[in-house]
Length: 399
Image (cartoon, rainbow, N blue to C red; front, side):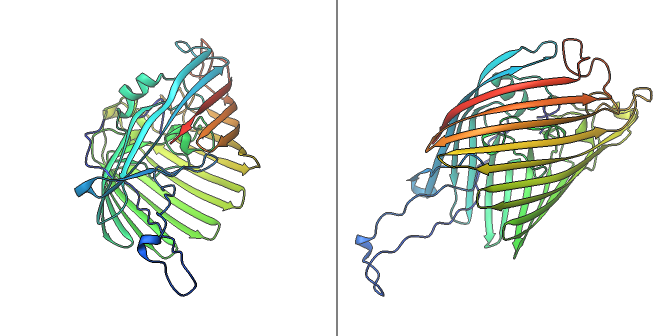
């Protein structure tokens, strides 16, 4: 997930996460009601796309698609407005855009399943220039950013093939999935979407995933990614790691120099009652490789804490604080992974949210500060200002 670095993937017959609902049974005690009297089964929200508060998913529309079986469809439409101080050259003080116009179609039952996510999206991120929705689609992941087939050979085993969400990081790619509208500084170091194959296995309280993919959407299949999750009651701990087993000079907006590196993260999540608390640590490294233009390698390390508190009457409040630092110096021509070699930065974000059934509105207030930056690589028209405040508002409907 990167903005200075990220991201159509041929629509492989896609697929979603398995959701199994239990039918409710009515009738007198010890005697089930006849099938003709049983009420229709109520639809419940699906687990894909994943949403980590504060927005709450709504039940999909289910329909019979003949030989395909029962399919489910839902989606989101929303718009954002953004104001920022100390914008960089080529950016603007105020922006407005369609942030989401997406449809999610999926089959969640049987031994073969699929998931297709298609439409328009915007991926605003702290400390990076705002990108229009049109450019986000054309320069990043196309109009079908996520699409995969899913095979279910066993109760606890699945195999996914196609364009997949990354296994790395605590924040998801699309804004409605996250606590805050804009993704954070640590997210900027990660990949967002990769194309490949992924094996998932659950054993008791452990869940593991292993993927062979193209990393930062490079279309070069030399990446190995994995994650291991332990869940016990309201607590979960995730260890994830990924790395490129090869090297390539290929770079685009979706495929930054980080495509030649490795990354690790440890994420703890506490979810209980009205609270979600999620601290995590992340480390990345891009090694020296002069043959592809990396004269001197560098690394980043940092941590963040994300918190969400659900209040009454559809209100909630989310916050995020984070810090990230990079190694290297300009004198040694180290690769720039932040705001110049050896720079560091921190950010604070506050996001109040209101949701009433399918309608929602929320806002971000954020501040990013760069330290030890290289002149020209920070904020402002000349890249010499170390601060960037932002205010973002978003409103839309989940359906």
